[in-house]
Image (cartoon, rainbow, N blue to C red; front, side, top):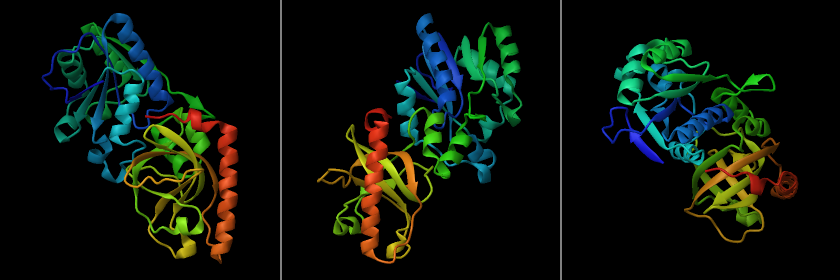
Length: 317
């Protein structure tokens, strides 16, 4: 997959580009529907599928107090877009100058003239251009004038809720991992690096990988059935996220105990897939009671993962 920076990038012209645009945080089911149409049409026409996305997230500039935490790191988003067969990702810097571009100028000058787009697929709720005044019907009208075909896809609705990045953030942040999985089409994962921890887990008989997350959206404190992926291999695990209250509240950590594994992951980059919430974090009156609870948590996590066959299906970038 080719990555270009800015629409003004003076690389070679893109052959018969079929384009979609948006932030694509999460690359959820709604995004996937767009990607599938774009990739299919590009292949059938002998062109190239193009995703135009923006960096940073527009709200970081327009309304920083409302800017969302991101479901995916930039690297993970690129990898997922590639996994769906996208040929080119155009990353447009979203700055004050770009935010001031009128919707019609953006469509006619940036998309149709500079990029040479001849077909587009967008969400039916698309808003674009200065003040987010541009709508799909505007894009279709301007496209018709320039010989550009514009197709729109309605939002996907699950359980009475529109699939959206904001909805998925809410689900993850309240621990509804199974419901988030339904909207994402995969289990939510965090990417990070394994760092040296306090070593308490090893002394208790449950050595853990202490994961420093690069992903912004995390589930709430508690115990979860998880799958840890390292070097392309997935291993079932049980994970605690929280402040370890039994030992006195400390910094928030993510600690994953990997079943039937005797090595260590220190210094490695990993992905951790969150499958199901088991319980809230709890302060125990003794270490012995904590150890018994960890045994129960590990057993419950094994049962959940075994029933889900999740180690084979969690996938991801």
